[in-house]
Structures are given as C-alpha cells and as structure tokens.
Image (cartoon, rainbow, N blue to C red):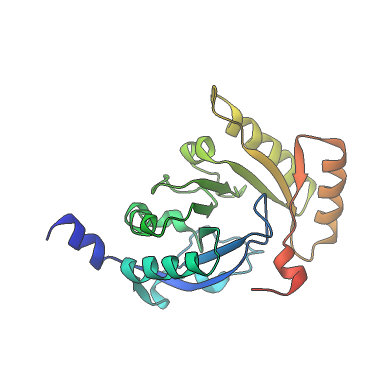
Length: 215
C-alpha cells in the first residue's frame, strides 16, 4: 500500500468532536473545533474526562472523516483545531496533523506531555502533572505552560516546570505561564489568585466554558 493510501485508511479512537469556544488559556473565547482522542494512562484523580481513559471503548474514526469535519468547521467559523484527550501523545499524531492540514486551520495540541512529541502543531499547551513528569522535548516545544493548582505543592511544581521549560531555548520564545485553579477547589483558587498577584510572570487561567455552561 502506498503512503497516501495508508494515511487515508488510518483511524484513531475518538471520544467526541465538536465546534465550540476554547474555554482556557491564551486562546480562551475563540471559536475552535475540538477533537478528543481516547486513551490516557496518566490517571489524574481530578480529571473531568475520565470516560476518555480507555481507548478501546471509543469508536475508530478515519483521518479522512476528521479532515472533512475540520474543513466544514473552517467554513462555519472555527479559528483553529484543538487535539485533546485523553492524552493525545499516546498516539502517533503525525498522520492526523498531515490530514488536518488540508483544512487550512492552525492546529493546537493540549497534552500532559508524557509522550514524545509527534505531529506538526502551531500551538502546544502543556499541562504537566507531578506524578507523571513531562518529556523534556515537550517542555522545550510548548508555547503555553498551564499548571493546575490544588495545593501549595503545585505552585512549587509550577515554578520547577517553568525553569525547565525556559532553559536552553536560546532565541526561541519562552512559554506563556498559566496557573489554573482546580475546578470546584476553593483552596486552589485562592492560592492561584494570590500567587499571580505577587508573581507577574504568571497569569490566571479559568475554565470559562464551565462557568458559562457551554460544551
């Protein structure tokens, strides 16, 4: 089989795909197509998409089908495509990003960074987890470092990740630094707000889609 035919017949487990607004980070409030891939071994206790963890229970969708959805989303006003999960880097994303590129939309990745980077992305949001530290290559490639805050230990972890993410970049821009309170965690909210007030390198990220009740 030639490479083009192989890519055309390739599939990935997809939990859901939908056109909505980005709710978090620098691109919050912008129109986006979300493709949520199944499969995650990171196992965060606070995860709000635990149904995405087992890859085998989710339907396989062809890359052609996903590319067609991206083209439609582009005509409907989507500004970019977000590949999320689950943990997307548990898959080889190169064939997916190659297929999606034809839609002409910037490609964003949301990842905990535990896997080796794959695929061609215009924007990488890295949300590292203390119990599963990110791959150094993902730290070096991210444009946005977003740490979830539940306790004071998360603030120390955030600073450690910021040092690693900015070290050795040379002329490559350092990532945007974000602290995001854990959902329904008053302690995390208070800690994040107070820390950002006194540390100007950081900014606050909120899950605005949850506050607004949008998907």
